[in-house]
Length: 84
Length: 432
Image 1: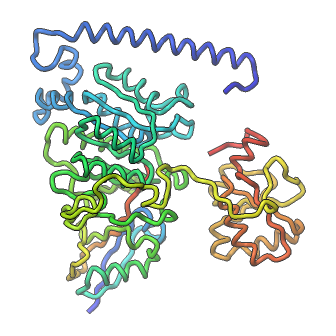
Image 2: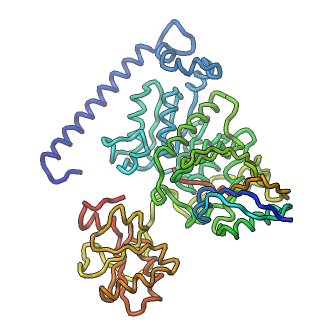
Image 3: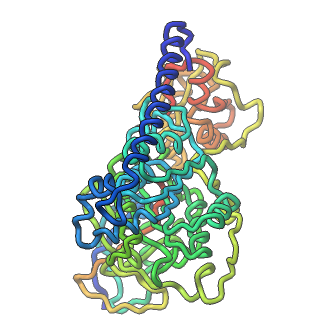
């Protein structure tokens, strides 16, 4: 079963994807690695794939995690900013 | 700088002399006032001026006299006195933090003033740390301000942290290498790092290395590829955004110094000024496998961060040279009959451009969409073209990308770009 959830983009991820937010269809049960791969491929984030925080419902995702997604879930892709 | 006009020159000198005189007299007055108010018999730990000056924050139960005394004893290191460091140090000085060490290697430029609120027109050309200290001293003469005009690198930061017991370090830097450097230095010395950053409409804030929370490397073990990093000098930044983040860095520092709850450690606050949203992302705890704060750290002393990140520890653009000498020309040697292709983004072209130039952005050239436009311009203008950009780097890249597709066309890079044009040909052209 797959599910469509909201995804938000910050900083460089917003620039590379050209989007502030979008909907992404993912398997209902998905590993962090699969989720990262899908997000990176779909939204053109290859150049920063090692430099992003993936947050699910405003919580940092550990790399070994497996998610059970629900429709109300929100994924956020957050690269660090370095300017000041 | 004098414009060649003797009257302007004389007036500028006179004003500079008067400013020096004013500074001396203000210094003298401050010293006398401090001496006068130093001793008082009415309050214990704070003197008369302190009770009055800080009354509005003293009245908060969470601060009180103990909190104010803690602030007074506090020693804070602020790296970068720019868009973040200015508001941060402004509020910390005003709040009565006892000792502020300000580090920045740059001098004030006019393009800083829209966001770096401690500097003003009269301090353009002066080291930022001196400009800032002068302003802060006027607001609060009762604290110790230590300006250090130096470049933050492994040696200087190591020395600073060895020689001083800082309670907090504030990261107000503008580049990735310095961010890793300050992170490691704070972990190795056990100091919390109040980290802020900003670009365009967005800001981020968190406190690293505090009460079991993660450090920068726990979250970002690998530095980003340099070409994916945008600086404020290239991407732009709206003044209130670093202003907002810098003010919050001061707030978090005050909370740490006064041992308050609710410090933004183990959380990342993201701010988007475009739709005014604040988000708090709950972070992971310290990583056991972190290279610097993990259980078996591999980074046990400061390393070469420019090498580690593959980028320089500043936000300046460094010149590249990928073309032969016969493919380049200095801007004062241009043949006015030839076509000039300006490869800057359209937005920058609209800010200012040479009257006889056409705009074909490098991004279009990269995507292969510009060949027709160039070919069309060439048909009208012969087979020799100048290529121009802001500083002379993208124009070289554009030539390298175009060359294979345009045999028989001579593409000539204008060395040093519009910055150099302004310097060598006409200084009315704005340098931004």
